Amino acid sequence: MQRIALLVVIAALAVMPAGAAAQSLFDEFSFGLGPYFGLGRGASDCAQSNRSTPCFFYVGYSRDPGDSTSFEFRAENRGLNNLFYIGHDYAVHGLWLGASKTVAFSDSIGVTGSFWYLLPLKTGTSLQHYFTAGIGPNQRTWDTHTQWWYVDLLGTFGSLNGFSLLAGVRYDFFTTRFESPVDSSFPASRITDSADFKSSGYIPLIGAQMASAGSYGSLLFRVIGIPSLAGRLNYEETLQGYRIKSTGSYSAGHFVEAFAEYAYAVSGQAELGLFARFNSTHGTAGMSVDLLGAGGAVRGRDTFNHRVHRNDWSIGGRMSLGF
Image (cartoon, rainbow, N blue to C red):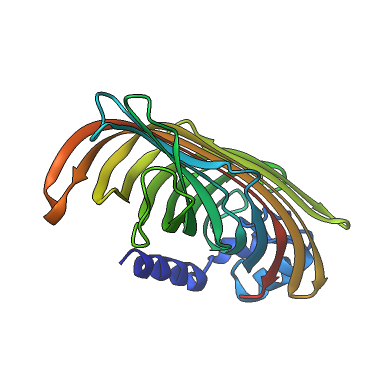
């Protein structure tokens, strides 16, 4: 249902008219706002003929330096069956695909919807367990399969010819499936063992951006973020014939993203450009963790403090089309 609703929103943005105000927004040297407003002469001609801002499409390579995607659980009390710590460290990288569409209400107010989806490359991960009585660390290595996408809705307020303020919200969906554990010292792994981590985040966004344009093309720099996170977390893992199952909500955290872009018109209705982006997410939560035995019977329960951290560096290209 979430994916269906997402597609409906994007389709609505793609066909929504910008109104008569959009026509005056894009003069011959339209000051572009990257994925928020048209860049350069091609976007101006397109906007004036179709009374709408152009669509932007992005392709970029994502690289997570080192193993900077990590999450951990640490028991507040005795833990579960003497298990008091679980930690994952791994890299997430792949190919980002993005699209955005802007509706401009005046020369100083607009709203943009954008959608990004990661096509990941399979990577390995290190999972560590720590037990009481001095047992640990104990490690298993897994194959990982990550899915990550997010959708933004941002309002822009201020001078489109320079500095403007941003406010909006992002829905961020991130999940990793862990399979085929190997290199286990203790506990012994089974071929059917697996683990699943899922985060559904609702991230309010505030920030600012600076844009300029001229015969050299168009430049944009933007920073958005928030000193808080909201959303749900879930984690499950098979361990020694038991099933660990946990759920909880973010209680604190922060998010920041920096984005830079350059674009140049190559024809009357098309532009090409380059972009670079960095974002960092950090969140904490108190989660109730159950230890399930045969038949799903609860064999133990404790509260674990959860921490998740994720960095993403991306660089790639952008093009605009006249619709």
